[in-house]
Image (tube, rainbow, N blue to C red; front, top):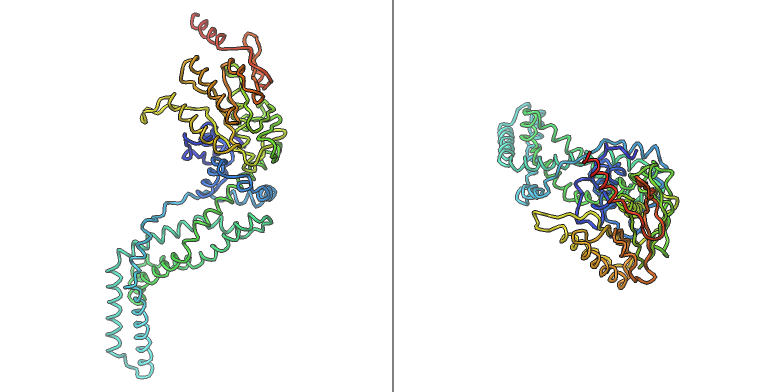
Amino acid sequence: MDKNISFQDGSNYIDIHSPYSYDLDIFGSGSLFQRINRTTTFSGEKALAQKLSNINSRTTEDSIKQDAIDELMLSSDFREDYLSTPHFKPKSIENNTLSDTDILLSKHIKWIWIFPICIALCILYLLINYIFTGIISPVASTTLTALFLLQLFITIVVSNKIKTALRISKSIIDFNKGYMPVIVKISAHSFKTLQLQKIQKVAQNYLEDLKSIRRIESIYALRANPLLWILLNGFFLIDLLETLKFHQWKVKRWESFPMLLENIGEFEALASFAQFNFNHPDYCIPRLREDILIDMKNGKHPFMGISGVGNDFSISKGSISIITGANMSGKSTFLRTIAVNLILAKNGCRVPAEAFDFNPNSQLFTSMRTRDDIKGGVSYFQSEIIRLDKAIDLALSSAYVILILDEVLKGTNSVDKLEGTKKLLYFFVEKSFTTILATHDIDVTSLELSSVRRNYCFEITAENPPKYPYKLTNGVCQNKNASFLINCILQKTRK
């Protein structure tokens, strides 16, 4: 299931300036978004992307609808039926031209309905007169003909405006039709949790609104027959009158459509989380705790599957964890494990661990995948500094921010890098920033950082070749592998 690539990967949501999503592969091919995504509409896709990339802007009470997710997870038949709905990617609606119908239906022509009434009266008079006298009144027939031609003339004169209104109305009708399957399914099911019931109520109300627009659509379909078009507009000004009705519907009902989209998006995001939980019964249910920020037991990265190695880790407000280790020993993957599992937990998803406790107010900022910008004139090192500046700003705003930094100041020489890292860590201690730092600089571990510092390492075996256990242990890394690996390359080259 994790390798399913049939769903959108969210590449359009990639943001290199995001507090964490770019570093953690939240979007893109094989991303967390693609592994969770089971949305069928653009609104659902957008809502899911927002939830995965914005845990900092919401508390758990706002973001987790755990009861709703659990209900959807247990409602297997409904969930699978809903998620099998064909994907709908709506065409854009010309919102900037919606006002054209207002121009067309201004107060100067809203009295146009009088003409069809006059024609109806003429026809009625002709029929009554013919029944009682057997004669067709020349005055009435002439008036009827004149009115018929006048209405055709009016229709032709404003035909461009009518075409604009028809195009817009068709766009809105098609947009609504695309959402119809999901609206119907949400409206028809019986939900128990309050969150799902609120979403259902919005869908049911809008379903009633759609009845009138479906009637307008059926009338518009008659325009395909030229003879019928002449008769309908000559006698009834059908184009103008139906456009008037559409305008009235738009004024009264269209404003409720954004609310519908928001609720459908929320529902589909919850359904995606429910499906993720259903697919991973072996994952643990995360628990809320106020006394820590994260406490993880045998936690694994969700991308690693059964081959992943689990690790324990705990961090509280104001503590600094320094992780050392040789290249390829697992430092970066471990940092991502902590961060991605926190994102899962804050969205009500199960976590690949034996236990995962987290603070509901936890926030996240990472600096792991810095890049330069040639077009923008930003060097690699400058980009690092900008990133760290943003990290400090966020950490100053809340004591619940967890800074996850992977090898800071990589863009400078080793002496300057060590000095800069020291100053950074002393500042973090002074401001009580919660920090997890992975580094190759062993000297960093000996800094006088009071009791808030914890040293961890990913050790490798001193063998030839070295082995990688990927287990986090207390202490400082002792073994290295760069020289050995370079030696292997050089020996291979010499042969």
